[in-house]
Image (cartoon, rainbow, N blue to C red; front, side, top):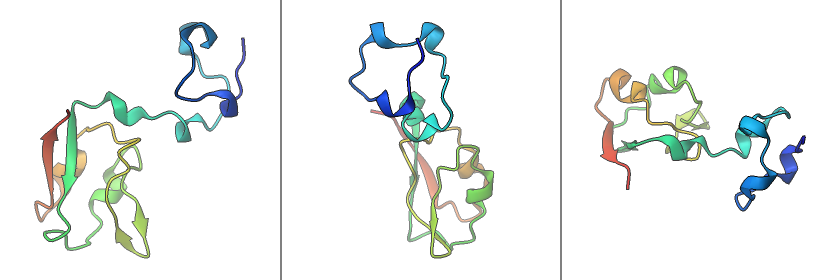
Length: 100
């Protein structure tokens, strides 16, 4: 059973899912909240951040938005909590918080 991306929403019944939860349609990352997978959450401290943007290209999930040449808070809907941003930040502007 093929499902269109527009038909997928948070209230979907398990009976309506594809076998093996395979995704047949492109572009589903916008509606699939992969951030729910993480066990630790990165926390951005704007006071410590010098806007060097080192964290942005290292994020494998593109979860660090840049608006007007400056980074903003994380896209927690897609951040999986890998910790790469924390490791590359030279100003310790990113810390960990256990997921609740």
